Image 1 (cartoon, rainbow, N blue to C red):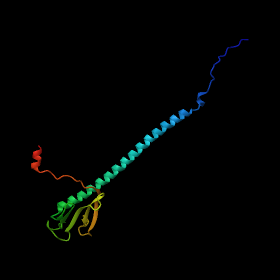
Image 2: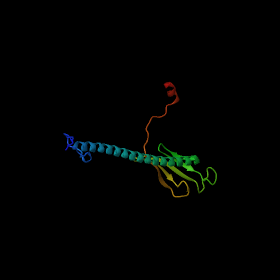
Image 3: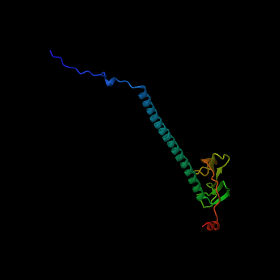
Image 4: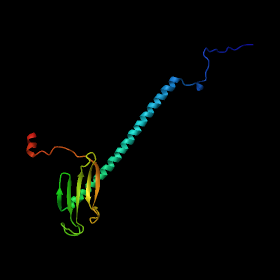
Length: 165
């Protein structure tokens, strides 16, 4: 009888599919996963803040545009400015059913002013009847809030400008 020779290996055969991870591999994988998670979370928070800022800016711009449009409409219609200061103006609007300086039932006065009682949250306001109902009850409407004054120098006169050139 012949015996066949079998191959003898010095290392035992192991099934690689059942091999466990070492502690170092688990720690490295967990650290990498945590870093990726933090990066994704920061990106999400940044996008959420940016979206909220854009929405707030859009609302603020729309309110400011509406207030300025209302002011410009009434300023074009006004036939006199009865009082004015650095922070307010009072306009007299004629009765639109008669002459330009009509004082009929549709005539009214309106005051636009910058309320400076709270310097951190200035407000652009309008006092007068509703713009679409001149005979209505007069009230004060906040057209825009969070307005800040811009301090600056007065415009230069032409003689000072020519000296600079």
